[in-house]
Length: 288
Length: 334
Image (cartoon, rainbow over all chains, first blue to last red):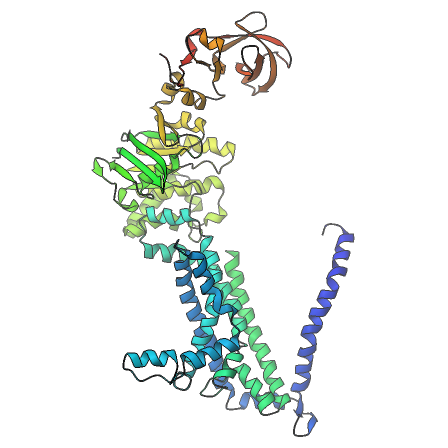
């Protein structure tokens, strides 16, 4: 990009992509904002005109709002906690030279290839089913009363399912990070008298901190919009209604597009707050 | 105290024997340099002494006690790595403190030793920086500082200067030599650079394919190389090795003569030749002379300002008492 000519040529060539992306983002965003100020009930009269901020007020003051926020945060936090703790341990394990390393690595990555809907259905029917599920059989084998996962501990069950899906992602990123750790550093620490545990806490973990922040950032963005897993398991009942699911219910189950759109705008704001917050952490971490 | 003895030490990686049975003693306070071409097993040998690799058979004694199965941290040795292996997320102070922290030393003692090491190594102003903010030479000094504070029985250096530029390398060479004089601790230093070996060592161990070719002081090796390999490896520029009838005149299969032991004349001498490429270093000039006695040019050292040019005819005369003779097996004939 040195000369003025190549700069303008570059701008010209980037233009179609920029326009497409802008349209892709702006059209739905504008429509959401447009509907959020309307009273729009498709099956009960359609567009009933402008109503100002009423949708926004109704969405927040509804008794479902704060529990939904709480569920969202618990879900995201729980999945992050599990994927990162287990992901770090798995990546340390997979980094060890062992027989069949390639096959094991592919097996670990496999859950990521399964569609969210499919994996949630598999978990629901094959593992967590209180009568026929594998976990129920396991419980019975030890003489315990099978847990009714999706109704007794619904949020925890969801956290489990989603963690299972996202663990490969975390493991993969952390594994590549751990492979870039200079082995001489570990040897130096060993000569300095650090036990394997201290080597992990003083050398490996700080080395992974950057990768961990990146995993947190990316996963948070995707986890905020978890939908399919809830849809095919609990349908939002038993306190598993997240913000995303609440918006879906408002739009499709209550057939209130305006109210749902207002919720959508709240979700955008929430996601942006999280993103800015995380960007700052990551930025700080990347500078060091 | 730091006498290190290797007894019939071998090392094999799977089927490949990297180090055949090897005996070596490094005396307390000695500066020993392992030198050899890359892949000769010198780093492996150092790692065996450090305990980072297990010996396949044989024994390693440190101060007379068997250390063969002692874990690295308990051997009382400190190592400086080629990449320095500093901990990037810790400040210089924390890097240096790390081994003491692991050993559970008191805070006062840690501070005392850090300050001492920092003043010895001129690091006082940099204690609160991170390794990423330091130059190569400073990082090297931090790595040495981290080794010093452990007050080890011996220091192990694994090609510590190979990542530095030429000028810095000369400076660090002096600093390490000075450090050795001051601490009088055993040091084992691995390098592929024979100049480093010659300038720093009390004792040079020349290795080839895991075998010790010769052990001796730098001048021993320079004056009486035991075989062709050592003759060719020690000394810069390389010794001229001449085969054929010229060597036969001296009852040898190969005769060796160092560039600095050949007299150049424009009028008369033993071998006639033509000047090829000449390298002017200011203090010295190296001529590559093409002669009739063999295909390869003969390297000759002359004074700094000798007026010889490409294509000039010269006569070379080797100094008779400086000729090295080697037999068919490449061993020295006395």
